[in-house]
Amino acid sequence: MPTDPNRNIIHIDLDTFFVSEERRINPKLIGKPVLVGGNGDRGVVASCSYEARKFGIRSAMPMKAALRLCSHAVVVRGDYEAYSKYSNLVTDVIRNRVPLFEKSSIDGFYVDMTGMEKFFGCSLYSKELKEAIYNESGLPISYALAGNKLIGKVATNEVKPNGQLEIPFCNERSYLAPL
Image (cartoon, rainbow, N blue to C red; front, side, top):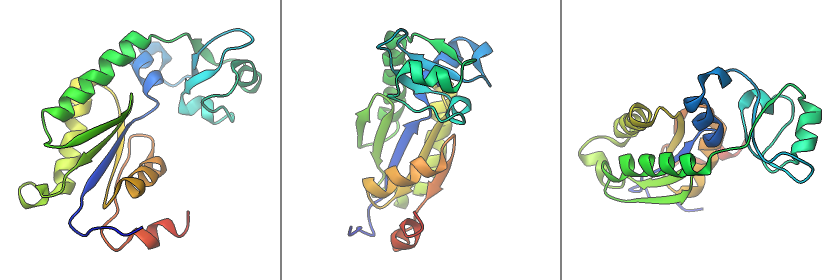
């Protein structure tokens, strides 16, 4: 897993994106266990809040099983048109602020900050980008700045929700070892 000392990649993840979007629309859902997905015998959990995860619920779990674990969870069918709209809004925020990025999913992005350290400082610019995304969308994000996509993705998952982390060059092994 060689890393180039000149590479600076940010992995950005919109935290529990579908749930966050539902909470943006309906603030009464804040603080409650929320499940987004299909109802009925064949429905699955597309996304779940961190409050629901405490009960052992995960994405892709059958909705029936999730409700057995947390019967008081609020189930929301989901508005995939709104999710696409806000995903595109976040994409535009990123597109307007960085020279090179990749949209890896509806709620995930990789930003190549290589060379930006000479102008802004990658750490500072990463924080500013996070703030800009939140200010323009109202959606929380987590991110990690690392030397490659893999380390960034792993680190982002470790700092959720709404966290940030930098894995400096040559510290990848010591970061990954306890994981």
